[in-house]
Length: 157
Image (tube, rainbow, N blue to C red; front, side, top):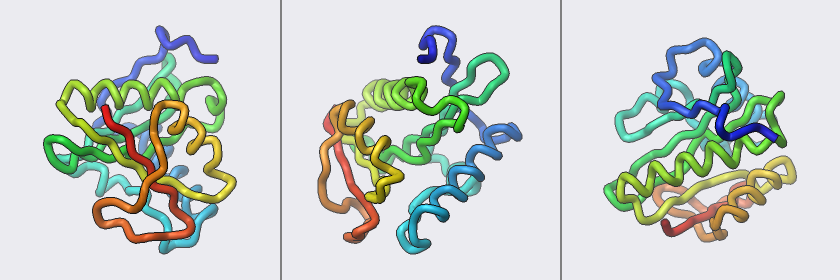
C-alpha cells in the first residue's frame, strides 16, 4: 500500500509528458475494452476545459495516477478520467485520488457527484472502489443515454 503522506496530489496543467502519456494510455484502454460508442473518456483537449480540474498524484518523480472533476454547475459535478498507472494498481492510489477529489468537491460546495464507468468485468475494481466510497448505481444523467456498457453512479456529499 502507498503511504498517503508521501503521495503528492496536485492540480495538473496537463503539460508534463508523464501526464499526457497516462491520459493516452487511459484512452487507449477505454477503446480496447469498450465499443467506441460507449467510450466517454476525455482527451487532453477536452480536459483543458475551464470547468474541469485535473489532479495528478506523484510519489517522488513517479506519476501514480490522475483524476478529474467536471463541475457542471455550482452544486453538481462529475468524476472523470480516473486512472492509476499500472505499476501502482492495487496500492490504494485510486482511493487516495478519489478521496482528494471528493474533499475538493466538498470545499467547492458541490452537493452531488456523478460518474460513468464501464459495466464490463474489466471495470469491476473501479465500480467496487466507487461503491466502497459511497457511490450508488443510478440511471443515466446529464447528456448520457442508457447504455448496456455503462454503469452510472452518484453520491451526495
